Amino acid sequence: MGTLTEEIFSRRLGRNVHAGEIVVAPVDYAMAHDVTGPLAIEAFRKLGVPLWDPERVIMVFDHILPANTVASAGLHKIVRDFADEYGVTHVFQEGICHQLMVEKGFIRPGGIVVGADSHSTTYGALGCFSAGFGSTDIAVTFATGKTWFRVPETIRINLRGALPPGIFPKDLALKVIRMLGAEGANYLAVEWGGQAVEAMSVDERLTLANLTVDFGGKAGLCEPDEHTRAYLGEAAVLDLHPVAPVYRSVIEVDAEKLEPQIACPPAIDNVQDLSAVEGTELDEVFVGSCANGRIEDLAIVAGYFKGKQVHPRTRTIVVPASKQIYMEALARGYIQTFMEAGALVMNAGCGPCLGRQHGVLGAGERALSTSNRNYAGRMGSAQAEIYLANPAVAAASALAGAIADPRLLPVPDLPRRVWELVGVRN
Image (cartoon, rainbow, N blue to C red; front, side, top):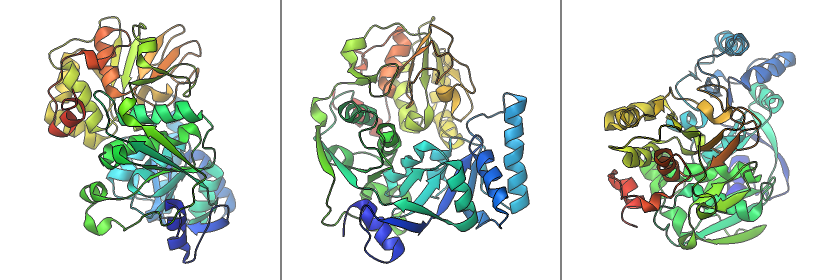
């Protein structure tokens, strides 16, 4: 009995586990990418032991793909040599690690997964306890298949009511970050629940879970339900619920009173209502990342772009989160729409989010991004400014060349699911 986190650890360890206990638990998978993987491999080699299970180690090339320097090509070689030597077959170069972990079927409700990337919290959208670890801890997991946890206490966030017109999960997450601050959930698990979450697709929940780490959360979990079953299939979904939970705190958010939220430079918790920064001129708009690079996000942007041109002084960059999403966007005509509108469309990956590929910001430039980090220097020059927003705000801002309110534009032609998010409420 307990929170979702306590339920998951109790099931895995075969006894009742409570927050505050330090446990050593088996993990389902350990993931690293082209930046953190080489460090984990170096630490693992120093242990001088066999690899735990080549089938449960995941390596992804996504942060610098293709390699843009001799040094990054060297990092890639370290990962490829390791995979060849130890028989690691799950090696991918077709998108962002967090999207691929879900798409490739490694994530299941009740699972425990660790990743050498802070946004590994993303998998909690499917009811999996997942967290980012340092490369040395990942190396030990490569060797043993286990790692230690201090089972975290949990904050329950209830999102009451339905999302109003033009409001998306990104706005809910930024609102919570605005309320709690960037360290408001340090080493706490977060349960996302309430009417607004119950109505969300898995894609939308992935955004909430992804951003949990950006206010300090160790993990961000949604209770598995019919949406999870529709996404994964009935057989793959464990009947997992909080049972008589004792929460560190319960936070209520009225989703119906929100307006679009903008994280302003230089920190993610410097959040303002859109109206406070509307009209701020932009040099770049970036649509993509593990926060908002999924097909529903691209559908929203394509809906606003259809038959229009992005502002000529604002370069607009679109990066699908994975090859699968890219190909679906191709099939739906979104890629053609982006290109006809004047946007640049890049290969699936992390892209401009961390300023390692697909262009950087110059000193004095200002960007609006659908990603999840906006500290100085994140996307290029430390003298550049980064604003974070939902995909509809990004689309409207790319068209205007300045931060703009999508609710003032005509309702776009969108697929039914996304239309329900934007159109019906308008």
